Every structure is written in structure tokens, then in C-alpha cells.
Image 1 (cartoon, rainbow, N blue to C red):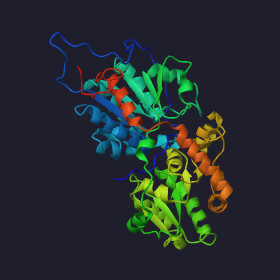
Image 2 (tube, one colour):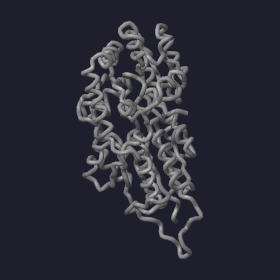
Image 3 (cartoon, rainbow, N blue to C red):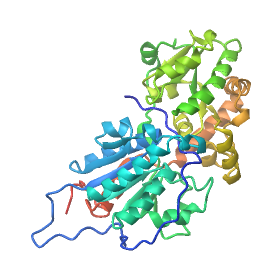
Image 4 (tube, rainbow, N blue to C red):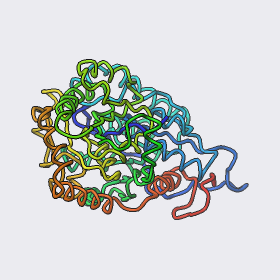
Length: 439
């Protein structure tokens, strides 16, 4: 299965209660279990629980699982994730499909599944004597789980990978996070300083997308696989990986595409299909735009090559904006959620921009459209500008190059794997050898 498009979490999910005392918590994550008088214990594998609740976390969790397997093939991995993590050898106690929800109204409809997952994961950590827990993004669920684990298994180290967006909203969570987890591994360069007021150990590990996105796919070969004529103008439409995002964002994107049919030469519109949703959902929306039938392609594979080959794209806010940036694809960023979620989030958000690309470079480099601004004409105007005005296109491309430079060096997944294996007692801190259990 090809990579799907991946989004960072958005407010607002479950409410979190205050953490209880931390009796019995480990003092230093790098401390290894002491060998018995008969020598190091090597008869049993380490057990590591990995929890990811969204498409982006599943991709990064899959990369992490593969890195752990390379370093320590006998380690037992289980938890929550999607197809990427399952394919990487993680035993899925729950599939993330029923948990990948954001926003107040969306969460309320899935409370039963959320509670069941929290209960079973807490029980599994205790009953299977887990050696370390890795929580990937998805903060309201994962921080609730961390609080439960602190009560039930207080000595188990908890590693948090991909920091909650405390730079955007609910900054008061920083102290709570520091009480609940043992180590924070951040992937954005400005995130480490946000935890300086705490004693939490924080590492900037670089961004895992740098290991996933490889440019240089052949356009002619892509055309043969998927159909769009190679000399036409390819425009990407990326409405998100969640059902409610596609329902809210794909129609205005298609309205924009419809208007561009007569405004630019030979356009072709490429829509990556989320594996979690399937093509039928997109086809039902496309049925309302018959003029686009011969010009639109639903791509169920080749996600990153699709981004690379598009001249411009309309992109749902989230990790997909970084993926487009790393593919050097100029974009307009859009987002629309429920009125209630947006109203409450607006009162909590502390940043002017919401697109990760803009946050990383520290300025409004790409256009952002939110809520009522997300209309076909607005999207079409910006796409046409990026196609026809070289000064604007050049400025955006320069900003995207800056994003790549600031995201660090490749190798994030292996760096994370080593820190996780240190926490689980599999390797010594700084050990560059294999991560087979030393216990």
C-alpha cells in the first residue's frame, strides 16, 4: 500500500484530568536493568507498546517500527495504528480507523470506541509487562492514556514522539506533559525551547518525512501508470485523509478545478485517495462535477510522486503541507471544520498562522484559507497565480527550500528507535551497535 496523506492533529478532543502523583517513576531513562548473578538476561524479548491514532502517526510509527526491527529484531511490538504499522510488524490491538477523529462533535460520536481502546491498552501494558511505551502525536487520547499508565504501571518509561502543538494552543499543557512522560522527541526545530521551563528531557530528532520523500520519479512512467498526459498541467487536490475533511474540502476544490478548465491550458487534476476511505467516497463527490470527469484522476498509489509531479496544489492543513513543501510543490493551504470546534479553537489558538510551512519559516509564505474563506473562486485564484506569476511562484519555492533546510538531517526514525530501545533497556545510551536485548 502506498503512503497516504498525513495530517497533524487539530483541536479539540478529549478533556484531560490532572495527573496523580508519580510514585515509583523511573529516575533516569537510560538506566539499564541489572544482570543477575548468572549474567545478562537474554531469554525474553523486550516488549514495546506504540500508539498512533491518525494517518500521519501511522506512517511515522511504521517507519519507527522498521527502524526498531533493524536494530533489535526480537523486540515485540504491539499497540494502536493503521496499515503502515501493521505492515511493519506491529501487532494491532486496535486499528486506528475508529479513533482517527478530531473536533468536539466528531469525538462525541466515537466516545465508546475511545474508552474501550484506553481500557484495553492500559490492561495490555500491565498484563504483558511492557518495557517501554511510545506515544505518537494524537495528544488528547495519548495524554489520557499516559495518565492511566502512570497509575497502573508507574515504573514503565513513556516516550512521546511528535510533540502536541503547545506552540499553537493550550500552552498550559507543557507542565502536565512533563509530569506524564519521561522523554519528548520533537520533529520541528522550534519545539525544543517550549519545554525549557521543565525538567523533561527533550531531543530534536529531525523530521521523519525527510526519510520518506525521495524526488526523481519519472513523469513519463507515472503518466503510463495513472493516465494524465505528461505535457499537460497537473494540479493536485489534497482534501485530507479523514472523512469529514474530504466532505468539507473536496467540493470547493472541485469548484476551483471546474473554473480553471477555461482559464488555464490543458489542466489535469490529481486526487490522492486515502486508503482509509477508498475511492468510492471521492467518486460520489465527483459525480456532481460532470465536466471534470475526463480531467480528474483518483490516485490510489504513488502519493509522493503525485505531489512531486504536480505543478501546484490545494492542500488540507496538516502534515500534507510539509509533504508538499518537501516535494517542492507550491500550494494554497485550506481548512474547514465544524462551527463549534472552530469557535472554541479560535479562542484558544495563540498563533496567527496555522499552516506548518508558514510556522516553520516564521512568515506567511503560502496563502491560508480557513472556514468561510474556503471557496472555489478563492482557491482557483491562488492556484492560477502560482501557475502564471513567476515572482509569486519563485517566492513560494524559496520558502519551501527554507522549510527543508530547517527540518534537520535525514535519519529521524533511527534516532528515535535508539532512544526508545534505550528506554526499554535494550541498548546502552549512545550505543551504535545492534539493539538486541542486553538483559
